[in-house]
Image 1 (cartoon, rainbow, N blue to C red):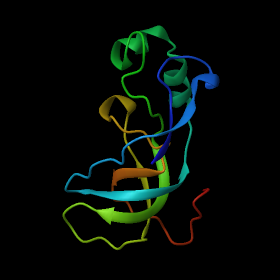
Image 2 (cartoon, one colour):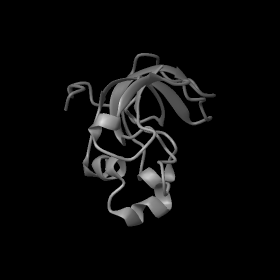
Image 3 (cartoon, rainbow, N blue to C red):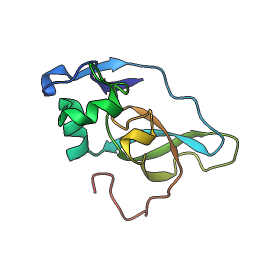
Length: 124
């Protein structure tokens, strides 16, 4: 799958679109085709590696997690060990960056399921 990754800290110039493996699903997760992913101030700080004290948690010389992002919206493509409607609209937040190895700036994401209201567009 495609993902926006960075192997070093720096400006947005270090970002690249690359192929990575699809995530393996845990029992309570669904595979989501991402239609929209948010970018926030935390992503910016983690991309830059500043303030430097953040590097103690996220990697001193290079980032431990190379894919950024916390928020996404998309449609279910598959599920873990429970039945969940395929193509159901979902929205998700991965939680704080230090509690997850997965970012949402990807083509497919494995996330806890949160239904998205049908009248809410992906871009919202």
